Length: 286
Ligand SMILES: [Zn+2]
Image 1 (cartoon, rainbow, N blue to C red):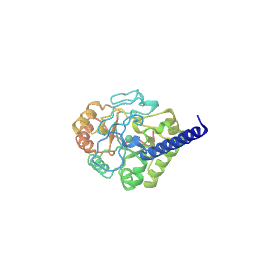
Image 2: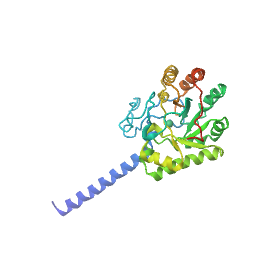
Image 3: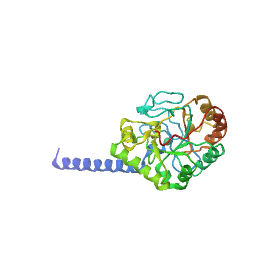
Image 4: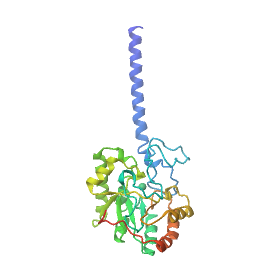
């Protein structure tokens, strides 16, 4: 090979490497936080869409195709309703008494949270709202209503990062504290006693940070998968048949079309009240 050919080959290699690096950086910048948006959640509303399904970063859904219910990232011991055993990494799955706790995740949402609050008020039921920091920042008035009406709040991370537990303790701590700060900025008298990991994707790191910050890791043991919008009848039947004494029921007041959840709740509240005492998770006895 002549010297000129060697030089030319070297230049081509350098140029190609540069182009590849640029394409990679551009690609990364074009698909930020894909895991929070490619959840496969059908929705008719604008705004952030998340749900407590397992992490999906490594397995993004093809357009128009639903994600599998589980991914290899999910803790296989994660209860999927009706399981009274300990939650992943010791997260709480029962109220500790015969009382039942209804929990609503991913809000506050301007369309659905007021409807859930109105139903709870109509039946005199207090519940627990696991709120997302960026949604609290966008809708502080709704957070104030939740607290003012006697419900308890639970930290559900800043932006519903299902992979938060895999990040550094410093990143996890900063995320949880930012969310707590947003809650307290909206409602200074709020007591934040719980943290719920998005997707139920608990790790030892996230539980360790919870302990450090005095937050009880909160899971669930009844999951009607309402984030998949299976319809009010399915949501209602799952909750009605799987809820027993001490249950923590997972539902969503945000993250997509929650009309099915609202309609199911309308039927469930009188039915559950005929069998159980319903309570907000207590802030003073985590
Ligand atoms: Zn969630």
